[in-house]
Amino acid sequence: MKIMRKSLVALAIAGLSVAASAPAVADADAAGCDRGSIVITEQASKRILVLPADRASWRERKVRWAWAPNAANGLADLAGSWSNPSDAKLAERGGEKYLLTSASGGFAAVVPYPAGDRAYWAANVGGPANPHSIELLPDGNVAVAASTGGWVRVYTASQGQRSTTYTEYRLVGAHGVVWDAGRNVLWALGTDALVALSVGGTPAAPVLTEQRSVPVPAKGGHDLQPVPDRPDLLWVTTEAGVYQFSKTSGGFSQRYAGAREIDRPHVKSVSTNPRTGQILTASVQEGHLCTWCTDTVRLAFPRAELALHGAWIYKARWWIG
Image (cartoon, rainbow, N blue to C red; front, side):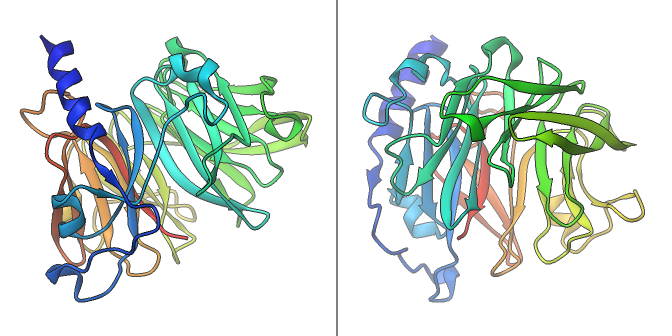
C-alpha cells in the first residue's frame, strides 16, 4: 500500500509545471520583490526542484528548474543509485555554477547549472553507506558524508568525471560537510561530534587530517551550513534542536535571533538567505506518509510558510547566486 501511495504522489509531483526562465510571481507576502529561489530534494518524484520563494509559486506548483539523472544527461548508468535524494545545494567555482547533490541510494554528483546536461563528476559511492551531504572543494575534488557508512570521503573529482579514488575519515553518523574558505578546513558533522579536517596531499592523492573535534550538545547531528556574513558561525541541527556554533569559542548556542521560530526537534535542513537574512527550515511533519519528510517549509524574518501539498521534501535550501 505504501508503495502504491508513493507512486500516486510521484505522478502528481511529476506533473509540476517547469518554467526555467520565468521570473518569480510576486506574492502579497513578498512585498513586490523577488526573494530568490528555494531548492528541495523531492523524494516522491525523485527529483531536485527549484521554485521561486513565494506562496503563489508554491500554491500553483510552478517550478523554475528540475533535475534527475537520466540518459539525456549521461547518467543513466547511475540512475539506480538515485533513491531518496538527500542533499542539494548551489556552488560556484571558476565562474561556473553547480548543483551539488546526493541520494541515499549511493548517488553523488556535481552538475553544471542551469544546463544540467552532464556531470562535472558523478559516482555511486555505495547505497548501504547512505550518503547525506556533498561539498565541492577549491581544488575541484568533492567531499561526501555518509551516515550509515560512518565516513567522510574526498573523491578525486579533479582527476576525472567518474573518478572513484578517495581518501577517508571515519565519523560515526556523518551527515554534513561544509568547506570553510576562511580557515581552509572542511567541517563535518556526525552523530556526536563536529570536526574540522584539513585537506592535504595533492588533488590526485588527498589526505584528511583531523584538526579539531567538538562534542555536539545533543545526539543526532544532522544538518551543517554556513551563516552568511557571520564567518565565525555555523548552523548545526540535531535530533533535539537548532544551534549556532562559534568556531572561535567552540560553543553551541540556542540564544540567537529568531530561535523561538527556528529551534525545534528533527530539523532536517536550515539555511540563511544571503540577500535578505530570511531563514529557511524543513523539519519532520507529523502524520506525513514519509516519516522523515514534510510538504511545508518554514521561513523566519519575516515569518511565513510555503506548502507544496503532497510533496515529500527532505531538505530545502536557499538557491541564490
